[in-house]
Image 1: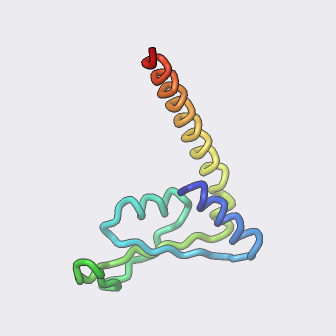
Image 2: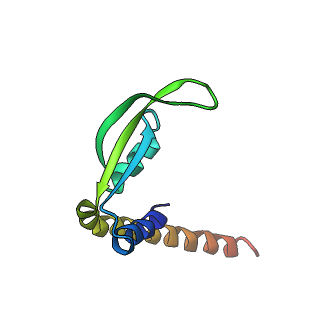
Image 3: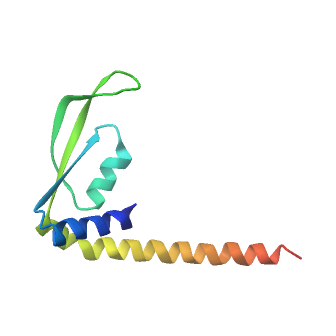
Length: 106
């Protein structure tokens, strides 16, 4: 997901010349909030009683985030490094799994 967002943000900021992106996430959705923050979004406030759940019919608060182009430019090297390190971990794991798989095929 992060790689896809990296490509999308590059397109939006560099090709379409967008200056700012916004993102919303339910206050209790910890994973979405962490993802927003890891991509460089800055928390700017909370919408109180803003969204009604279609499943539970309860009203929820939403956290609001923004990402300015100038902040994105600063974050790109950090995000690329995370993706590279994650790819190396997956690559190493894949090699171990393949090795174990061949070893057990006797």
